[in-house]
Length: 180
Image (cartoon, rainbow, N blue to C red; front, side, top):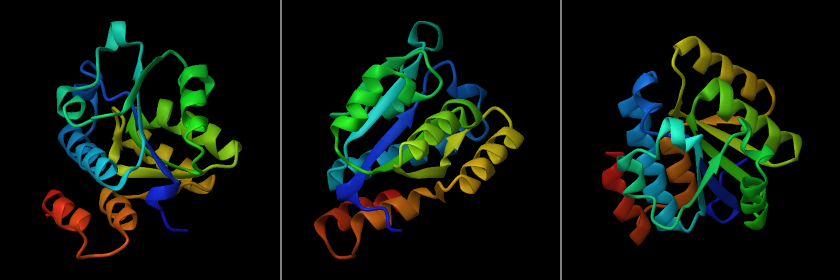
């Protein structure tokens, strides 16, 4: 199944000041999430960002906040975003059926959010190169579990090119430098 811009919501989970430095490959994760945010803005995909316990873990990292544009940013305490009433209402309010997820930590908030969305019948795509945990084993376990549960395990480039759909458009020309 293709990831279509008109059907998608980009969910960016807990990429916060005090959490990012502890992750595996934080620079890769932030760079790819930044690309996803720019692509979402260009093709009209709504964005919901979360911050787990922001008083303790800080705000979304500046590199992402700077390109988040009109993203909805929601604080939360639940590990599964869908257990948070504000998030669940914001997500359902988009009336879209596909969730494209990037975030931290893969084996906690990402896996629980994705599992909740799958249980509710949404199509879920987890962006492997924009998702991280403190250990590689935890990250791999998350992706394996979600793959077995029916989530699509995808990369940033897969998402961007599926959202675009074809070459030669103004959006393609604008986003191409982010991929190269």
